Amino acid sequence: METTTSSTVDIFEKLSLLTMKEWMQFVRPVFRFVNEWQTKEKMIRQILMYAPSDLVWQMSLAGESKARAKRLQGRKRKRKQTCNLEQDLDSSEDDFMELPSAEEKKCCYTNFFNATSDNALQSQICSVCAQECGPMDEQIETVHLADLPNKSCLSPRYPHPVQKLIDGLLLEPNGCLATASGLQIRVC
Image (cartoon, rainbow, N blue to C red; front, side):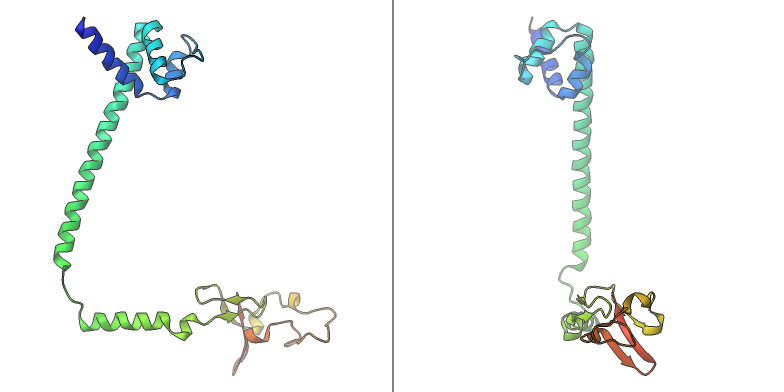
């Protein structure tokens, strides 16, 4: 008598590992669930009492395989954590309390000053759309006016007296640079 109750408890635990979807795959062809069986415990009891023994056996096998997969995953995770911890200890022992060389210090200071200087934080203006682009916008580039594609889109049909046209084009003056080779404009 004691073995049947222990095996029932064992089967109960295996069935409790299954999800509702998995239960429905097994049980739906055999019988329907009633709304009174709303808790997992009640559903398992009804399955154990009324379902055919081969169905209960199949469901317990599915629960057992799910439990086995969880145990393996836990072991793998634990093993992986210990390996990573050992690697971290090995790598940190070599570099611990080692001072940087004078050249490395100089390189760090130079990178810091370049990243925080006025030139690094300076914004630029696109001459086509007159939008201000920050220093992190890498899309802005300087192009010769002759190389600008679709210049016809920037020339107004009927210029307004207030508009200041540059070479007949409606451009933002702050985005234009006059160089010896000709007019260069910033385009985003």
